Length: 349
Image (cartoon, rainbow, N blue to C red; front, side, top):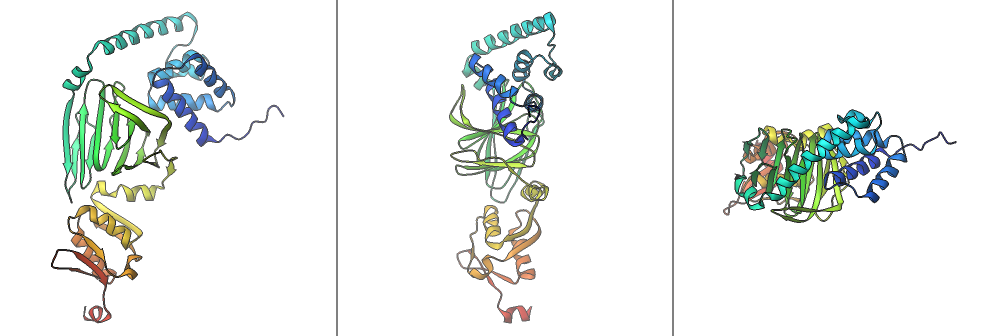
């Protein structure tokens, strides 16, 4: 029947819509691309309102304007641009002039001037420490242990280069300047949102707790801009995470409980719920310069639960001895050795 439509794959449609917005936002559309976008929107009635809604969330003037120009209907007319008759032409004519003036000024402004006027500051959280920073626009950054970030604030962008480690960001909205975090071969772009970025060498995990971010791999990064790999872009919503190295993974949904555990360090605690001792020791090792070694393989798979002060390795080791019958000793080289408590020792205690 002609009035029966297939049930849409909303996750796929949302990703396709995000890709269209990225293409519009980064240089407009050719005639061929506009025809392809028109065909894509016409293939299912759910696509146009979803595209407009994502454009509103992203706050992209280019995307909203192009949509209102291409599709002057009740859905697109609510984006804040008058789409009716001569009034619409006057609005877009004025808008085109303003954008042309901005573009001309941008192209005439030497790139070196931008970099000279940008403020650049480096922040470091050493082993066992955290660094909490209020950025110039009121955004917040928390660096976890063994992390380093370089912050650039200029007239056209806000950028943080995460050189190593883990950082959490709460971003203040600013329609004039994007907020971008670069890490390894990719970048995370946000408007007003909260998310964490964890860099381990060339492997990066992005976890979003509020809003929406765009994660993209880049072919090249330099002072004049970046070249993005078009097939390696993802929009990641709150309660989701992606990983990237040579490719960006599909967004993965994270439960509220798991999200809380992953971000517990931002509130000064470790939160474990059944992780193995082996996995937890790997986490503890980030917070101390002393090596920790599990000598008894039987306790490596021991599952641990509880709340602990973040960075308090000694306190965690005491809790292991008191509650999990794991013995902690330090040898002459400072190595922390974990073994199962003997029955005699347990009886004595």
